[in-house]
Image (cartoon, rainbow, N blue to C red; front, side):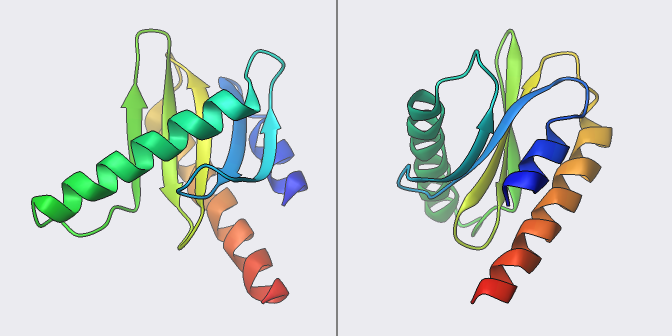
Length: 117
């Protein structure tokens, strides 16, 4: 899985990526030098759990992916049917293109997980 994250991070505008469980445990990470693994995984867990809870309360069910946007960057969360792929990007990245790259990486990760199981 490490090589999939490394390849994903080669896209311009991606600062780092990781696979994290909804309770914040890091499965795999390939974060740049400016990103702290513990901080990103803790924030990811908080956002994922809060979003899942909200979606359940309003009857939307589960989510496949969503984007958290801040003034200087974005975090994309992609459900891998258990853990989540979290991708940290620059603010100016084109989301439509990066969604294709993230979905491709997610499919590769899910295939690797099936082979292991």
